[in-house]
Amino acid sequence: MTLKTILAAAALLATTSLAQAADHTVTITGFSFQPANLTIAAGDTVTFVNKDGAPHTATAKRGGFDTGNLSRGKAAKITFASAGSFAYFCKIHPSMTGSIKVN
Ligand SMILES: [Cu+2]
Image (cartoon, rainbow, N blue to C red; front, side, top):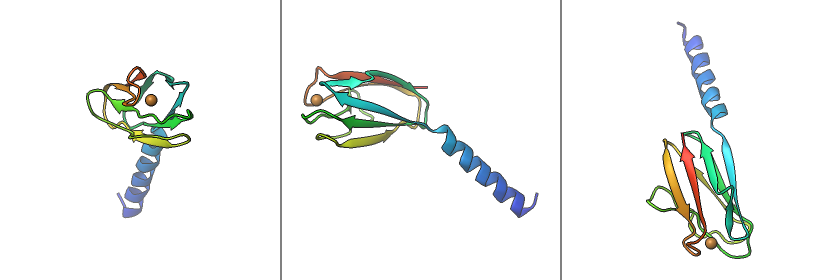
């Protein structure tokens, strides 16, 4: 295998893994997460966007991720590197809940 072939193969691999990771969006509106339950693949990202007037967080109940306070119009992008189930809530309004399942 020539160096040129190896470089081409590496470039192809990099392109393939980029194409496979998807970005999902959870919109926070009306004091709820939309969609509240989301299933994604390992390596995907989820962007939490706050469209409410009130500040909110998306915080994993058992650790793993926390957007911190998101005021109106703010967003946070979280990468889910490995499989698992993540129940989360809003620290400011604990009755707001959602879950992300990573396959
Ligand atoms: Cu909230």
